[in-house]
Length: 284
Image 1 (cartoon, rainbow, N blue to C red):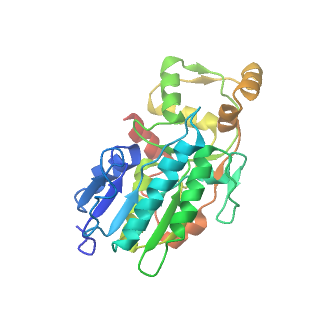
Image 2: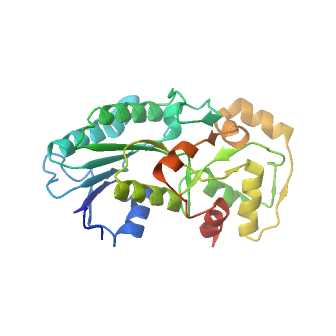
């Protein structure tokens, strides 16, 4: 256990990232949990807490008003951060998202302008700004902006693709030559742990080193599943998705490259897992 860190408080401990961090690092740190649904922020004792990992969030959902995102994704972490600073917590780490850049970017760099166009992205950026305003010499703030996180039982499109491959070995996703960035869950929690240990602060873009096309991703998944896959290009499907499911169409066919070399160098990171290793661990 790191003797310099008395205790870490985690919100969203039952969520995907929170639970995976606890599984991996529960022997490295004393970890306590806080849930805004069952616990009282007013009664929360932070006297022994050195680091807070705020993973709790209301994620992308349809037909939910912005006020709900504001309550969960803005007010909750900001109130927690204010209390943390007042009670002598040294480090607040906020898990944000590349959604703060909007859905129309094909390349994201450290100097890319934020321009969210969803309630989720707008709320995340507002929380980032409010929490960052609390930063001081004694209160470090770290903002982590990952792309889609993948891993065993992760929510998201990769596990949907796995189910689709198992359902049918013939799929209309051939010749898609886009490039997209993802991050394997074990790489993400590795980075979070480094930020804790090294007390890094600031905004960090994080992703796997490699970028991959939709067609190649499906091939790699099928190979790990030992399923012989046949991919073909369907102009009809392209038209239907583009017209009626534009968001899904963009995720399948457009580029989304995270150029995070600056932050990788700043954190002195050597990621432990390649995308091939991540995919193999999901399947096997």
